[in-house]
Image 1 (spheres, helix red, strand yellow):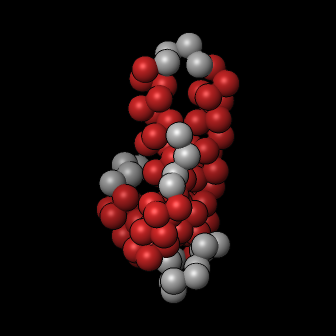
Image 2: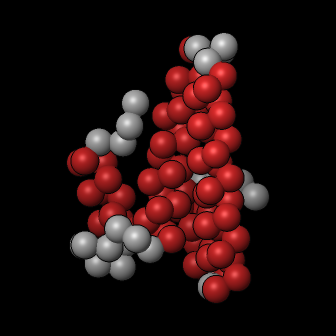
Length: 89
C-alpha cells in the first residue's frame, strides 16, 4: 500500500535537485501524488473504508499546501509540476 523504496528512488531522481534530495517540495509532492493514486485505487475496491478516506483527504490537503507554497515561490516550477505529474488545477 505504500510507495516502495525503488519507486521513491525513481521519484527522487526525476524530481529532486540532486540524488540525495528528499525534502524539496517537488519531491514531496511527487511522492504524495503516487500515494494518493494508490489510495484512490484502494478506495475504489473498499468503498466503506472511512479511515483510509480520511488519510486520503489529509494527503490531498498536504499536497495542496505544498503546491500553494511552490506557486508562491516559483510559478514556473508550479506549472511544470502540474504538467509532469498530470495534476489538474
